[in-house]
Length: 78
Length: 153
Image (cartoon, rainbow over all chains, first blue to last red; front, side, top):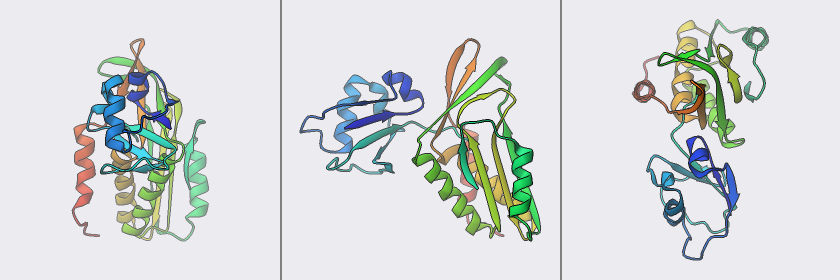
């Protein structure tokens, strides 16, 4: 799966994106956050939102068929 | 026009184009945002704006569509910079055209408040020899909340 990181998460993770094969038990967005969060604790901040294939999700969502997960920290536009 | 621009934007040219597009409206309100040159007493060199190449445009289009309906606009333009923007340079141009002035002013105000809190854009400020990520301030969220109450037109 392609994993992407925006804003301050680029620095926290040390990359804007990378590809990672997920273990079978990482099958939804909550599990993905916890699994990656062991390596990158910044992702565990509950203000960090997740988008699966460009769609923001609000509750745990299946990763079945998902090509890309994006981690979005609080925004600062305008 | 709704656009993200990786290149410098020229508000005068954008307004000239908008005047043509808005022909027939009763009035136009515009807002041009500039990159502030100081922050907390430190000199700001530039901002770098991170964005998502699809989600950011989609979010701004949703804000624009909501503004058009809510304020009964005839035309609306939002052009937002992405990438590196130097201190003092325009970071955003917004223009709303409506039959009457109040709707145009309100629409631009609304668009700005929504952009601050709802558009996937992240600012990194270059100042004091270091890079600093900026988050929306509590004031920005308060400003955004003003629009959640039904609005008397």
